[in-house]
Length: 190
Length: 84
Image (cartoon, rainbow over all chains, first blue to last red; front, side, top):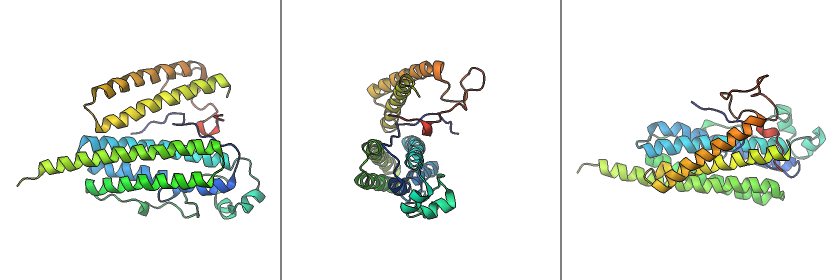
C-alpha cells in the first residue's frame, strides 16, 4: 500500500511564470525518460527481484519517483499560473490548452501521451537493473538539457536537486546489480 | 504561508530527506552499523520536527488526530505554497 504525506520532497521554486519552460518541463511528467515512467518501471519490476536488497531498492526508489512526479507537476502548475489564452497560444501550447486547459496531463514536450511502451519488465533482474541504470542516466541528461534551456535560478535550483537524485539512484541500482550478480553466481552448480 | 511556518516546513522536508537518503543507502548496505545509527537518529529528528509543525499547522497525514473542523483538507496543498 501507499500513504500520502502532504508536503513536497524538496521546495519546488519558480522565479516567474514561463510557458515555454512549462512546455519543455512537462516531458519529465509524461515523457519516456520522465518521473511517471521511472516510478511505474521500478514499482512493476520489483516483484521479480530475487534478493531483498533489490525488492527494497526498487520499492523505495519507485516511491521516491512519485515524489519527483509531484515536484514536476508543481513546477509546471506554477510556470503556467496566471497565463492568458493569448500567451498560451504564443508559447505553442494552444493544442495543449484545447485538450487540457492548464490542467496537468501525462504528455512529453511534443504532446505525445504517456505509454507503458516506454518501460520494460523483463523478469530477468540483471536485464531490468541495466534498464534502470540507463533510465537514471537518461533522466539525468534530460535535467541537464532542461537546465540549459532555463534562465530561472529558482527553477534551476529545483532541477539541480532532481538531477542529483538521478545520480544517487544510478549508484544504488549499480550496487543492487552487483548484489544480484553475486547471488546468481552463488546459485550456479557446476 | 508565513515565514515561521515555511521555515518549520522546510526543516521537516530536510530531515525527511536525510532519513530517505540513508534508507536508500541501507537498502544496499544493510550491515553498515554507522549508517543504521544515523538513519534511526534522522527518523527520530524528523518525527519530532513533524510533531512540532503539526501542533500549529495541521497534519501531514490524515491518520493524525486533528482539531475541529477536519484539518486534513485545509489549504494550502503542497503545490500551492510559495517556497521562497
